[in-house]
Image 1 (cartoon, rainbow, N blue to C red):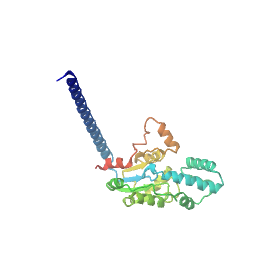
Image 2: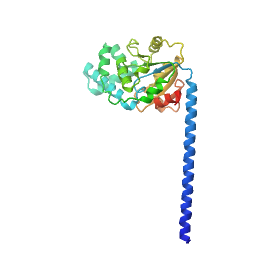
Image 3: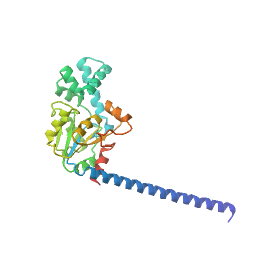
Image 4: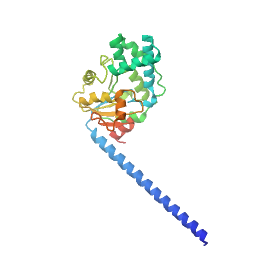
Amino acid sequence: MSDKSLIRASASAHTADLQRLTEADNAAAAAATLMEAAAEAAQLARAFADTRLWIFDLDNTLYPAECNLFAQIDQRMSGFIQKLLGLDHAAARKVQKDLYYHYGTTLAGLMAEYGVKPEAFMDYVHDIDLAPVSPMPELDAAIARLEGRKFIFTNGSARHAERVAAKLGVLERFDGIFDIAAGDYVPKPKPESFSAFMRYCEGGDCKAAMFEDLPHNLEAAHALGIKTVLVRSDYIDHPSQHALAAATALPPYIHYETDDLTRFLTRIVGK
């Protein structure tokens, strides 16, 4: 064999060795990732083992924020204020956000300052296109396997929650919907809203967990001894979300966080 042939053979063997080493490293890394995921799932299953009351926010929580449903609602709230007060879009949006930050919901502010009838407002802002929402059978399967009772707790309307949950394919999994009307139009995060919800679901003695995209709503839940899970997304609107995005650690009232509700629940219940 010529020197050139020997060099080519040696190079080929070296390449094959490198490929085998790379494949072995990849396999080891994949195995380590699987073991880590299994350990995390086992830890979550233990942490939620005694939970018997499961509380879910709706907007940007039960459905993924990427659907941009709340962006539609947000724009319709601005439109409602434009018509109500005769403002241009920019001025109406400023009023909307000022009311939202001060009162907890835009509706609460409109009722307090302008005497708006809540039914008309809710019907208007929730008249949106649900086409971006698709059935989520894996989410449905995970919720179905949660032991205990499950409720939707929303600052929106029951009708809106029913429509969205039905589109997701999870409506039948819930024992009830506690909406803003059921809470006498007192919104989360006010303690009165949480107290009314707990009376509604008779959950005072239950070990509970709450899933929510707005950090300040979880602070009130934590004060009641509820296990809290923040569902994070790229939709950041409220000051509490901006503050959390700038923070280097979770505040003590948030026990867990996830950017994928289905995956988080699946880890709790197991495959």
